[in-house]
Structures are given as structure tokens and as C-alpha cells.
Length: 299
Length: 82
Image (tube, rainbow over all chains, first blue to last red; front, side, top):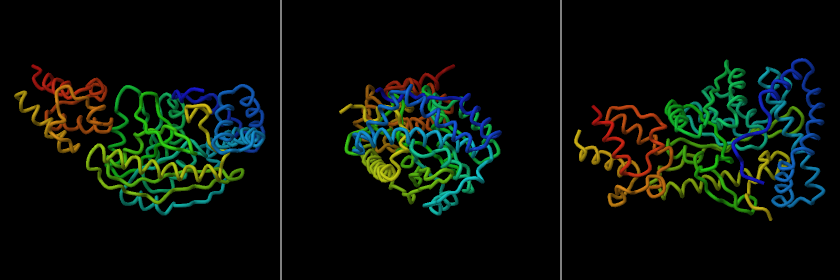
């Protein structure tokens, strides 16, 4: 298994097919077709199956049988989350119910200072973003250009009347950093993932489910650099058409005294992120959607 | 603007903004690996250049700058460009 290359399977055609299904046949029909898609990926995506098995069997210590059962569940959940995202964006959100933990903290953040929300490729990041619409501020979602260029354009079109902007991270310049800086100076919210990085990026190695794994430094530096609070957010799928949104109380770290001190603060922030992520994944083991060698070493 | 003045402005900025010691700043010091500056810090350097030296820097240009000396040269060449 290799590291994440910056590209995600599926594309604009997949999104459009699901939009078509949802519009003309409804969410339940899309869920039905999803079973065949899951079967396809179980057979033709051995890398994803292997990565998922490693997470469930080696990191969560599930038995082999339970691990295989959960791989199917993971693929099905991912499909459900994608369908739900499209349904949401297509205006079918009245069919869904939600629980919110920590929304009040984010409201305060939105009204007073702006800040950084760090998410993860678990549960539904996009639905988390959609729920952030409830906040009376602009939310800037940071995405990798390679991963999301076409999809982002498509989503931007769907988001055009909403208070959501996209900032894409390219390989060859720092223009995204200027946009992030500008957004935070305007007291807006910047939402970014804290679990993936492009090859060559700065990383920190930390214990995650009792084994060392690499995490990007960038997302955890932003709140320190701009002196704004940070919250870790996730929207986890609980049952069909029901999501639970979690946001940790925003924390504002002190200004670093030196680059070394800043590294210590990044480490502290990352440890909080990992603890929160581990707790969530223990509760929702079928929603870890990083289908590559996250720990970068086989056992 | 004289080269010495430009170097002084850059050094003062690096010392104040990133809490560096003057002896850390040498011509061949690597900005990222030795001074531990991150991409976000380079954004600050671009802002400084635009503010202090009055020319616009494209983000792609600063990616090429690796050492303190290269940073001086980059600014000096642009400031003294006819």
C-alpha cells in the first residue's frame, strides 16, 4: 500500500449519476443501487480493502471475521455519505435529522473571532460543512486541488447561493495561504482536514491507535499563526438519514515565543485532535475513510 | 536603496517576527530547514517585501527562495531593477 497520492477515486460523472438517481428516483433507490457499488469496490479495489482491514484488524483489534464484516459496512457508509451529500446539495435535506454537540461554541466563534475548524476523512465532512451554514458567517473550505478540482467546481456551482467558499491547495504556490490569511483577518471560518497531506509536505509523527502515523503540520499551524481559536469538527452518520455533528470547544493557544515553542504548541494541538479522533472512531469504526496505508508500515 | 539597508530591514524583520537570534541569520542559512520557517511564514515575508520595498511578489517566486542570501538577492535585484 502506498501513501495518499492526492487523488480520490470517482469523479464528476459519479456525482452527476447520483444527482440523476436522487432527483428522479429518490434517496432510497440510490441506497439500493449502492449495494452493487459496494460489491464492485470489494472485488475491484483491493488496496482499499487491505487498508480498511488493517485499520479494523490491526489498529482496532477486531477479529478477522468482524473486520471483513466492517469493511463492507465501511464501504456502504461511505456510499451513503456521498449520496447524502448530493441529496443535501440538491435541496433534499428535509429528509434528514441531526444531533448537534457543540454548535453553541461555533456560533460564538462565528460571531466574535472567526477561527479554524479541523476535520477528518471520517463521517461526512461535506455534511459538516453544510451544517455550518447555520452559522451566520462565511465558511471557507480548504481542499486539495488534485483531489477536488472538478468536484469543487461542481460543488461550487451547487453552493453558489450559500455562504461557503472553496480554497484549493495547489502544489506550486502559496496562493491558498493568502486566501486563508485574508479569510481569518475578516473573522471568517476556515475549515480544513487534519489527516491528509501531499508528498513533500511537513509532517509530525504521532501515536494514533498505538502506532506511529504521520499528520500534516500545516492545518495545526494556522490557528497559531493567526491567533484564532481552533475546534475539531466531525459529522458522523448514525442511522439512515441521521447525522450527529460534533464540535469540540474552541481553544485559543497562546502566541508562540519561537519556532521551537511553536512546534511544541502544534504537538499539543495535534495530540488533542488525535485523542478526539480516536474516541470518535471507537464509536463509529465503520466511518474511517482513508483507504491507503495511513500508518505507512505493515505489521 | 542601498544593499546594506535592505539586508538590515530583512534581518530586523526575521529577528522580530520569528524570534530568531542575530547569529542564526547567515547568508547560507536555510529558511525552511534551519530557521524552521513554514509556508505560512513565507506569506509574512511576502507581505514585508511588498510593504517595505514596494513591489509585488507572486507566491510562485518565493517558492524558489531557499536561503537567507537568496532572499537578500531576490529583493536587491528587484529593488534596483532599472
